[in-house]
Image 1 (tube, rainbow, N blue to C red):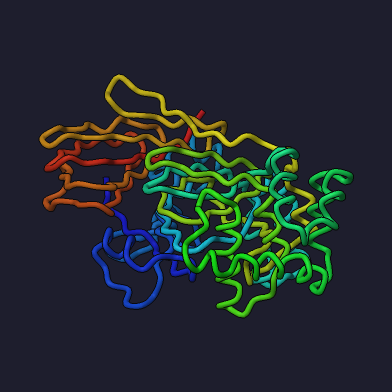
Image 2: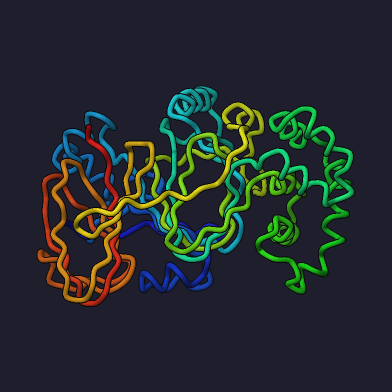
Length: 394
């Protein structure tokens, strides 16, 4: 097993303390939003000598990935492992199926669309699993019609569009609001903003209410001199989900979602494809949004872990590109890493450990690359929590 260093993404919505403290680094006044541990070329991890993991894998893919992974997924890791620190709400977004990604990537490349105006940066799908590392809030899928109407009916200024929601359905409603002139959108939203500005400022709105996150998004929009957009109305018709520390949520292709606050592990197919639906200064492609989104209402649910005989826990999701396993070691306990036919990435979330092939000790934030067929032993110097990301080779 070899030690790797992740790539830090300094997006504006990121926090200032969580990742720097975990990694023992100082980024000054710059936000640290994501830590990428994988070989995606938009942010490849590196070996200890500073060379990119993606280049190292490309030099000997079958030996470093495993023949099964290469045959099934090509000469790259099929998954991307991230740690996120969400200080401010992200954009509302949807991810494509693999067929949609191939089609969209080919189309945007053939048209010569500039990088910052593209939704497709590769030809892969991007299902995601997230494990909450703190209290976590997110928007996840559309509410059922009864709940959405109850929410919209709280605000008199929305009366003119509430009836339409029932008549034209969720897809028609989303199409409508994203095509409203700015003046119409302002007429709908400004009364809600002004009526609740004081209560929000005085912390009189609960985080369990959609209105809180509506006002949180408005706060960012006003600070950054952005225009009001239809994403604000999406907050009222999407499920607001509170996820306890340690719980897991799976987000399949087509499910609109937005992370709102908290820290998490995010494990996904190895892709950076994002079709954004608002609450962002970045490119929003309404046409593609309407094409790939699943507009069926869903009931949010967490993924239950499956206990293994060795004390670990697997989080099973309906894709083969990635799987997450959790190990909780007590001080003095040893863990012989299971042999795997494909490459794996290990991440130490907390505690201190020592690998048998390393002279030094490793703490939270340490990450390791396990080559196919390779085994090693983690020895827990203190209580420790470790995660393994892997993929199916079948």
